[in-house]
Image (cartoon, rainbow, N blue to C red; front, top):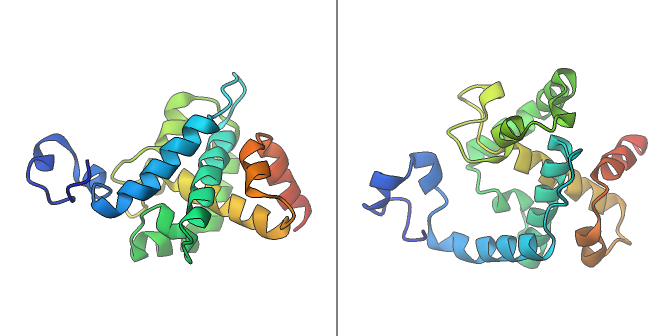
Length: 174
Protein backbone atom coordinates (compact mmCIF):
# COMPACT_ATOMS: atom_id res chain seq x y z
CA UNK A 1 0.00 0.00 0.00
CA UNK A 2 2.96 2.36 0.24
CA UNK A 3 4.78 2.06 -3.09
CA UNK A 4 3.74 5.56 -4.21
CA UNK A 5 0.53 6.81 -5.76
CA UNK A 6 1.95 6.33 -9.27
CA UNK A 7 2.84 2.67 -8.71
CA UNK A 8 1.47 0.98 -11.88
CA UNK A 9 -0.43 -1.87 -10.26
CA UNK A 10 -2.42 0.55 -8.07
CA UNK A 11 -4.08 1.98 -11.21
CA UNK A 12 -5.98 -1.28 -11.64
CA UNK A 13 -7.30 -1.54 -8.11
CA UNK A 14 -7.66 1.97 -6.65
CA UNK A 15 -9.22 5.30 -7.59
CA UNK A 16 -6.96 8.39 -7.72
CA UNK A 17 -8.36 9.72 -4.43
CA UNK A 18 -7.41 6.43 -2.76
CA UNK A 19 -3.90 6.37 -4.24
CA UNK A 20 -2.90 9.80 -2.94
CA UNK A 21 -2.14 8.35 0.52
CA UNK A 22 -0.21 5.34 -0.80
CA UNK A 23 3.29 6.66 -0.38
CA UNK A 24 6.13 5.82 2.02
CA UNK A 25 5.70 9.02 4.08
CA UNK A 26 2.29 7.72 5.23
CA UNK A 27 3.67 4.54 6.81
CA UNK A 28 4.59 5.98 10.22
CA UNK A 29 1.49 8.17 10.70
CA UNK A 30 -0.78 5.32 9.59
CA UNK A 31 0.89 2.92 12.02
CA UNK A 32 0.38 5.34 14.90
CA UNK A 33 -3.24 6.01 13.87
CA UNK A 34 -4.11 2.33 13.67
CA UNK A 35 -2.30 1.55 16.90
CA UNK A 36 -4.14 4.31 18.78
CA UNK A 37 -7.46 3.26 17.26
CA UNK A 38 -6.82 -0.26 18.56
CA UNK A 39 -5.96 1.00 22.05
CA UNK A 40 -8.69 3.68 22.14
CA UNK A 41 -11.45 2.32 19.92
CA UNK A 42 -14.54 4.30 19.11
CA UNK A 43 -17.13 3.70 21.85
CA UNK A 44 -19.92 2.01 19.89
CA UNK A 45 -23.28 2.80 21.36
CA UNK A 46 -26.53 3.28 19.48
CA UNK A 47 -26.63 7.02 20.10
CA UNK A 48 -23.18 7.85 18.69
CA UNK A 49 -23.54 10.56 16.06
CA UNK A 50 -21.49 12.13 13.31
CA UNK A 51 -20.27 14.61 15.93
CA UNK A 52 -18.91 11.76 18.05
CA UNK A 53 -17.20 10.17 15.06
CA UNK A 54 -15.53 13.34 13.82
CA UNK A 55 -14.21 14.32 17.24
CA UNK A 56 -12.97 10.79 18.01
CA UNK A 57 -11.12 10.56 14.71
CA UNK A 58 -9.87 14.13 15.08
CA UNK A 59 -8.59 13.27 18.56
CA UNK A 60 -6.57 10.33 17.25
CA UNK A 61 -5.07 12.36 14.42
CA UNK A 62 -4.30 15.29 16.71
CA UNK A 63 -2.37 12.99 19.04
CA UNK A 64 -0.41 11.51 16.12
CA UNK A 65 0.40 15.02 14.87
CA UNK A 66 1.78 15.79 18.35
CA UNK A 67 3.79 12.55 18.50
CA UNK A 68 5.32 13.26 15.09
CA UNK A 69 5.85 16.91 16.04
CA UNK A 70 4.08 18.31 13.01
CA UNK A 71 4.26 22.08 13.04
CA UNK A 72 1.13 22.17 10.87
CA UNK A 73 -1.50 19.79 12.28
CA UNK A 74 -3.30 19.71 8.92
CA UNK A 75 -0.40 17.64 7.58
CA UNK A 76 -1.90 14.59 9.35
CA UNK A 77 -4.96 14.76 7.08
CA UNK A 78 -2.82 14.76 3.93
CA UNK A 79 -4.62 17.63 2.20
CA UNK A 80 -3.02 19.63 -0.57
CA UNK A 81 -2.58 23.36 0.04
CA UNK A 82 -5.70 23.98 -2.07
CA UNK A 83 -7.81 21.49 -0.09
CA UNK A 84 -6.65 22.97 3.19
CA UNK A 85 -7.42 26.49 1.95
CA UNK A 86 -10.89 25.36 0.85
CA UNK A 87 -11.64 24.04 4.34
CA UNK A 88 -10.52 27.22 6.09
CA UNK A 89 -12.45 29.38 3.63
CA UNK A 90 -15.68 27.37 4.04
CA UNK A 91 -15.40 26.36 7.70
CA UNK A 92 -18.40 28.41 8.88
CA UNK A 93 -20.54 27.22 5.96
CA UNK A 94 -19.68 23.59 6.74
CA UNK A 95 -20.63 23.90 10.41
CA UNK A 96 -23.84 25.79 9.55
CA UNK A 97 -24.81 23.12 7.04
CA UNK A 98 -24.16 20.30 9.51
CA UNK A 99 -26.28 22.00 12.15
CA UNK A 100 -29.12 23.15 9.87
CA UNK A 101 -29.53 19.75 8.21
CA UNK A 102 -29.27 17.81 11.46
CA UNK A 103 -26.31 15.87 10.07
CA UNK A 104 -24.15 16.71 13.07
CA UNK A 105 -26.37 14.66 15.38
CA UNK A 106 -27.30 11.97 12.87
CA UNK A 107 -26.50 8.35 13.68
CA UNK A 108 -27.06 7.16 10.09
CA UNK A 109 -23.95 5.14 9.13
CA UNK A 110 -24.18 6.09 5.45
CA UNK A 111 -24.34 9.78 6.30
CA UNK A 112 -21.40 9.45 8.68
CA UNK A 113 -19.46 7.70 5.93
CA UNK A 114 -20.06 10.68 3.64
CA UNK A 115 -17.98 12.91 5.89
CA UNK A 116 -15.27 10.48 7.03
CA UNK A 117 -14.31 8.10 4.25
CA UNK A 118 -12.07 8.71 1.26
CA UNK A 119 -13.87 9.87 -1.86
CA UNK A 120 -13.25 12.30 -4.68
CA UNK A 121 -14.88 15.03 -2.61
CA UNK A 122 -17.34 15.46 0.28
CA UNK A 123 -20.69 15.12 -1.44
CA UNK A 124 -22.79 17.85 0.26
CA UNK A 125 -20.19 20.52 -0.54
CA UNK A 126 -19.60 19.90 -4.23
CA UNK A 127 -16.75 18.74 -6.39
CA UNK A 128 -14.39 21.51 -5.25
CA UNK A 129 -14.47 20.26 -1.65
CA UNK A 130 -11.88 17.83 -0.33
CA UNK A 131 -12.69 14.35 0.87
CA UNK A 132 -13.05 13.47 4.55
CA UNK A 133 -14.05 16.93 5.78
CA UNK A 134 -15.15 15.32 9.04
CA UNK A 135 -11.54 14.42 9.86
CA UNK A 136 -10.47 18.02 9.32
CA UNK A 137 -13.32 19.36 11.47
CA UNK A 138 -12.60 16.91 14.29
CA UNK A 139 -8.90 17.69 14.22
CA UNK A 140 -9.59 21.39 14.61
CA UNK A 141 -12.15 20.92 17.37
CA UNK A 142 -9.57 18.95 19.36
CA UNK A 143 -6.80 21.43 18.57
CA UNK A 144 -8.89 24.30 19.94
CA UNK A 145 -9.98 22.23 22.94
CA UNK A 146 -6.39 21.39 23.85
CA UNK A 147 -5.23 24.99 23.40
CA UNK A 148 -7.89 26.07 25.90
CA UNK A 149 -7.16 23.20 28.30
CA UNK A 150 -3.39 22.96 28.53
CA UNK A 151 -3.68 21.04 31.82
CA UNK A 152 -5.21 18.06 30.01
CA UNK A 153 -2.62 15.43 29.17
CA UNK A 154 -2.59 13.42 25.98
CA UNK A 155 -3.42 10.32 28.03
CA UNK A 156 -6.47 12.09 29.51
CA UNK A 157 -7.54 13.23 26.06
CA UNK A 158 -7.27 9.71 24.68
CA UNK A 159 -9.50 8.38 27.46
CA UNK A 160 -12.12 11.11 26.98
CA UNK A 161 -15.27 9.98 25.15
CA UNK A 162 -17.72 12.77 26.05
CA UNK A 163 -17.46 14.41 22.66
CA UNK A 164 -20.61 16.46 23.06
CA UNK A 165 -19.11 17.82 26.28
CA UNK A 166 -15.95 18.86 24.43
CA UNK A 167 -17.94 20.77 21.82
CA UNK A 168 -20.23 22.27 24.44
CA UNK A 169 -17.24 23.53 26.44
CA UNK A 170 -15.82 25.18 23.33
CA UNK A 171 -19.15 26.85 22.55
CA UNK A 172 -19.52 28.08 26.15
CA UNK A 173 -16.08 29.66 26.11
CA UNK A 174 -16.68 31.67 22.92
